[in-house]
Length: 204
Image: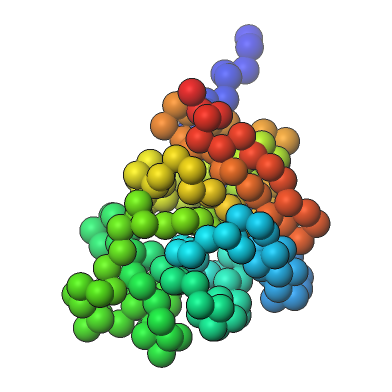
């Protein structure tokens, strides 16, 4: 009898598990994250962007928080996401003092600042978006945790806004299975290099 074919969902789950384990086991995440962030800050796309969305790292993700003060001092408008009822809202960050430890020990904007109109940002205002994820390929294929938070946000970004994914090399796979609603990254930046993805033209 033939073995049952692995479903797309099963394949994505297996890739996520392998990527999580590899990332968890990786030593020197802090210095490697500095290398990755230095590559990002040197990108022409980053240099040209006036408004940039960073994510704030959690658990074993590529660390961004150590580079946020440098970004805040650069004169760019820095934006970070936070989750409300399964949707990502965007916050204009002007100081690390505006962050507090929220649910799941994630650094988030202080609750009393979230309703301030001047702090709200629309996704169409972003000139560059830095994206986390669990696993990637060198064409810009990405899988997250499976909840679709970033997919929902990114589908409303301007078509010309570069999507820049951060990953350790151990999170790269030969190919990430992609569906029609999945969004390819324009760039995947690791400690070893910058990979040019196919971008949003690649999922049609």
